[in-house]
Image (cartoon, each protein chain N blue to C red):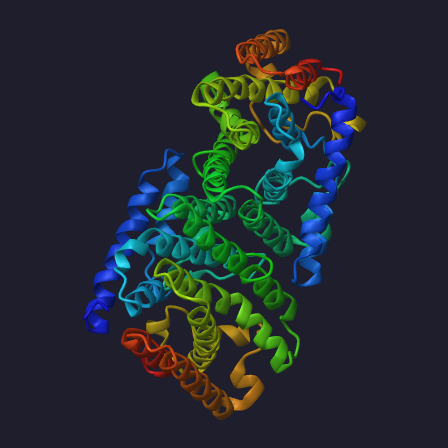
Amino acid sequence: MSGLSLTAFTEKYKKLVEQELKNSVSQLAAPEIILDSMHYSLSAGGKRIRPLLTFATMSAFGKDPETGLLPAAAIEMIHTYSLIHDDLPSMDDDDLRRGIPTNHKVYGEAIAILAGDALLTYAFQLVTAMKFDAETKIKVLEIIAKAAGAEGMVGGQVGDIEGEGKNLSKEDLEYIHVHKTGKMLEASILIGAVLAGADKEQMELLTSFAYHLGLAFQIRDDILDVEGDEELIGKPLGSDVHNHKSTYPALLTMDGAKKELTYHISAAKEKLNQLSLKTGLLEEMTDLVGNRNS
Amino acid sequence: MSGLSLTAFTEKYKKLVEQELKNSVSQLAAPEIILDSMHYSLSAGGKRIRPLLTFATMSAFGKDPETGLLPAAAIEMIHTYSLIHDDLPSMDDDDLRRGIPTNHKVYGEAIAILAGDALLTYAFQLVTAMKFDAETKIKVLEIIAKAAGAEGMVGGQVGDIEGEGKNLSKEDLEYIHVHKTGKMLEASILIGAVLAGADKEQMELLTSFAYHLGLAFQIRDDILDVEGDEELIGKPLGSDVHNHKSTYPALLTMDGAKKELTYHISAAKEKLNQLSLKTGLLEEMTDLVGNRNS
């Protein structure tokens, strides 16, 4: 347990991971334009929720979060690559991300695609370089690869694209979100647990926690897309409707979506309670997802 | 040493790796369209030179090549992803690859990009699953990630795109080819060596062998683009000129390019001779690259 408040914890570790993202890319010997493009999207802000989940999970086990810096940065690189590719004209065709032009708007499509490819590849390289025994590294790599690939995030993005303009069932919508967003959130938590030496039961409880947190996270995102503050979310409201995406409010009504959010937040917190660890930071992070004004 | 002729060796291990590529993707639980798209490009043929180099290197050390099946398949997946992304409209904008429509022509750009992403990610997952100790797996993963990323293949592709329409120097052209093609050929050889327990000196000789083989491979490709058989290479002749690419024949004259090819073939074979291993298969493969009619 770090003993820090969530605010102090977030400030400290957000800074650390952002520094690591910058340093690690700066070390690469590669054409300047690809490094610029990688830096551009890595430094475009964001809450860094994935690395923070890794750190907070390690902290719950009493393990120094800083020892998880490389895999946490790797997870953020994979998240960043996925945003670059998702924003491309052939995918969501977004011009803005976090209030600034998307990568392909600045560097062109070819470099944007390659920057994404390079970030994904470098993420795996970073994990091989962390200071843990080889078996732990392999466990972390397995978790990340599975979460990022066709059975995880990429599968979810395929479902998302295929589902555009269709009236999806709740099951279809849940498939998309569990895979597109949920699997990498889950991986962020599970790699923290692996690094901290979690046992099988703890891994299962954290997997279940991650499932509810991931869905809550996405439902909140859908709600904010209707009711949020444009400046805060960095893109125009109503982009889901504009992109012909199915959403929880459209499927369940706004009231139903809010009830669903409350349910997943409370289920997530129940799993944390069953862990008998110092999960204070994870609980507060869960509450933040549940608070639609944060 | 397998004791097989190169023809029998190629036939046997090409079949094995193609079966593995098919089986491993079939095991994935993911939307059908992404699996179809991955299968489409994986099964589109090609000489499978990279996995064959892994197998032939293992064979030179007297190690059973079949134990390298998963990482060899992983290398071929990464090669396949790179072809899918390189063919995209924003990159080389190719409609044909190995005589059949490119991935995005069949599945659309979005799915093609995602199939590439999924293949790259799955490649790393496959290596974590191979039956070697964790330290060997990490060594193999390091080699592959470095060869595939910004400092390797992606960097070369960036150089290639940035160099279009420019008159490149021989050094610039060599940077592109050493990175775009050479690094993954080198990785194919080095992972075979790692799996066979090569020592430092052997790794260095093989690195040098790979350097010359990689350049020879690319020079031959440039020559074939002018003088080759359209049916054999599966795309129209003159595509380099059409795509405003710098080539060895353009830079050195056709005669100069052929001399350069001969030089690299002979330098590659010299390195093999210094290894004191049963490098017969690697030598024959090198000769095949040198033979411009094969």
